[in-house]
Length: 179
Image 1 (spheres, rainbow, N blue to C red):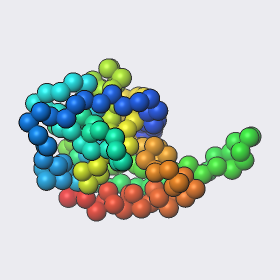
Image 2: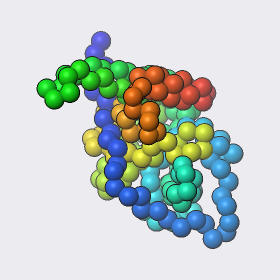
Image 3: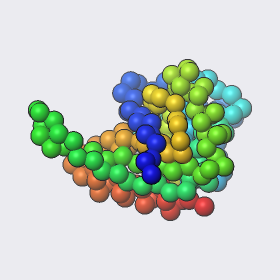
Image 4: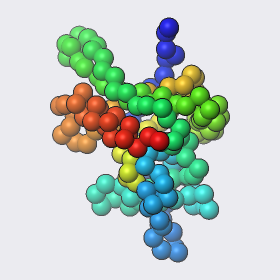
């Protein structure tokens, strides 16, 4: 049986459009709210459904819209997939992706939630253990029950040399959050 072709998001390379932190003080962390893993729409403006999530380093928090597009409870498993491609300029190149398998009962909701993100060209943040690990742009509607994320968008500087091992490690970390 052939699996459907998953969406292949690409890393957003522009600067973050950051919203100011809530005037009412620090917000509860996403992990304290029960979020171990989530795909969230990056908010364009503050509002009651927006939470500010810290970014690595000294960068200000990123505003994310809730409910999340997809949570750890919506997934059955996460798989690291590695492909070898040939390039005339670089020779053999290995690329890795995370394939998120969505529970059957969450597929329609996820597909419907992603459509407005695509219509407006919004970005999507991947959150793991309360921290943003990547910000992506989805380029096509989600069809089927899987979505693929290019791991190059999620690796820290210096990790690019070992994308296969890093992607497998990230898949294990996300799988550990699944209920």
